[in-house]
Length: 193
Image (cartoon, rainbow, N blue to C red):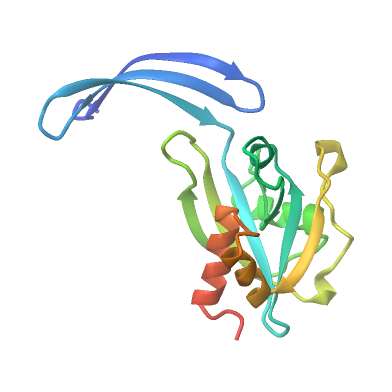
C-alpha cells in the first residue's frame, strides 16, 4: 500500500509478559502534506468477548464483581462490577462469551445476540471486544460460577435489576466502560420492558 500516510521506521519490543508492549517509530503524512515523526507505545493483550445476560420477565441482569489491579493502583475501589468477559485465546467470540458465562456466572446460555465489535482504547491498546447480550432465566443455571481458580479468578456473581444497575452507573459504582455500554444498550433497545 504505497498510498498509506504511514511509513514505519522501527518497532522495538519493550515487554512480552502477559501481553506485548511495543514502541513504534513512524513517519506520518499530515493532511496538509507535511511529514511528522511519531513515537508511540502500543499494548497488545489480545481481543475479547463480553456478554450481558438479562431476564426480561424479572427485569434482571447478571454481573460480576472482581479485583482489578489498574483500579487499585490508581486509587479507585479495586472491586469492579462488570459484565462477564474474557480473552478470545484460540476461540471465536461467541464460544468465548459462552465459556466465560459458564465459568464466571454459572449459567449456560441458549440464544446469544452479537451487538457491537469495537476498539476499547484505540489510542494505545490493540484490543477489540465483541459485545453480546443473551436472555437467561433460572433454569439456565448450571453451577455457582465464580471463575476459574487456576487462572487466579475469584469472582462474585451479582444479579440485580436493570434499574439498580443503571442507578449504580449514575452513582459511579459501575465504572467499567464495557458494562456501561451493554447496560445502556439493553435500556435503549427496551429489551427489559
